[in-house]
Length: 99
Image (cartoon, rainbow, N blue to C red; front, side, top):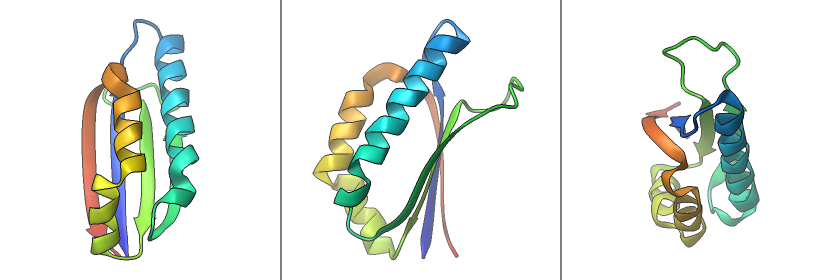
């Protein structure tokens, strides 16, 4: 199993604008859940700590294999999400690891 975790800071001048961007991000990823072969689990969560070094949103996914994760990276549904999100994200951090 491969775990793929991505964290973002969202664009926006206010906390409400960043929350709206994060909610849009969540809706986009949840909409493609069933389209991705080998995707076992998908969660999107919002930070509630409000510490200055925290990211605004996290995507937690589990894939059945490295091949499935590689396929997800170039899957048309994932590419559509990336395009739809556009410049709503201002920073991105990623970790992939085997479990």
